[in-house]
Length: 89
Image (cartoon, rainbow, N blue to C red):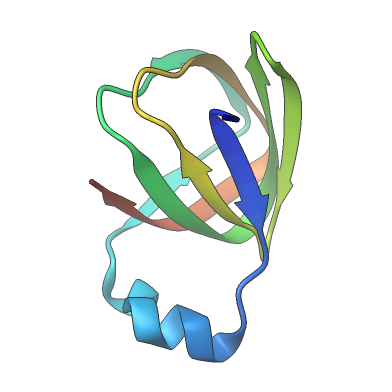
């Protein structure tokens, strides 16, 4: 099972999940190590990031809905300033 899942949600799905009410996280262009001690779900509002993992690299853009599985070790390379709604399991 992939540790990073990227999908597109419809406006209806976004509303049903309550995503507009989730907290917002922002980050400038940067590169940093990250470890997920719980699963994260996020809706990318702006920006672009490449997440480097042992499974390969994942390019994430505005409009993507992403799930990062618990236990994932990765490197975030923020290419364009990022803004996202997020929620942890």
